Length: 404
Image (cartoon, rainbow, N blue to C red):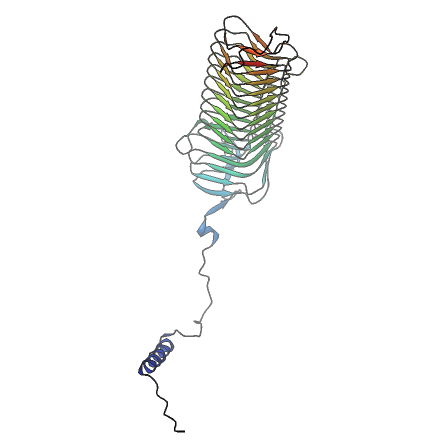
């Protein structure tokens, strides 16, 4: 059989020529394989180039003996850090800050005071943009951490974060205006755990076994997700126009929560406080809270919720096993949709012109409802009990109060 010669298409020939030319071009344009002569240097940035930081020590941040003597003193903006634990000196502040724009990272180390020492960390003047975080401040002769008390700044506030402040003679943390305090713990300090000025925000903080109150703030401030336990006075005390949201306050020698004018306690828990669970000032609101076992000490002076002021709103709270569930001493308040079980008295309303609607009380040691004349009360529905109720008439009334 006759064989035909092999024929290669022109397109294949063209592709091969192009590929060969490309390989030649790559070979010609490639750089030299031999490294350059001399020492090889790194092309990466150093830590100081990425984030310039200064160690706290006698060389970089020397203290002084002026009117506020200090062991270390920060006088310039920048980022500073501890390289190890620091022990204080009698008569001196541990670290003094006199410049704005300072970040102080304790890097997990401790500032440890000695008898006669002053505050652990203290800032002076109208400083802005301070950040202090991540360490332990304990055993100082005055306040653990004190920042911006005289003025502070709301536009560029101080941030205190992840600090444990314990065993100081004075307050654990004392803050100026507009400060943010986040994820800090104050324990066994000689005065208040946290003491704040105007427009302070406490977030996820913890106050345990301080001689004073766990948290105390003046006005327009907030506490969110905070815990106060076993403090010598009130657990959380908030001033004018302030709010506590989602907090827990228990086993304090005073009340769990106290408010001043036009403040709110929302979705909180107050348990086993010697005083009242919640004590409301004028124009304040308690809503969605749980209050149990308050005021059961020898004096029996506490209540689940104690409405001291006038024109308050007490709505949708649960108060169980207190000396009294809800005591209303003030006037013109709205008591609506609350549940009081197993208290000495369920609802004790002594003031005037209050509105009591849609509540439930049961299993009280005394009366489920003890309401003075001069108040507006929706029909009460329940079985015969110490209040003298009978039958279940008016059970379909939309605002009825129930007792059983």
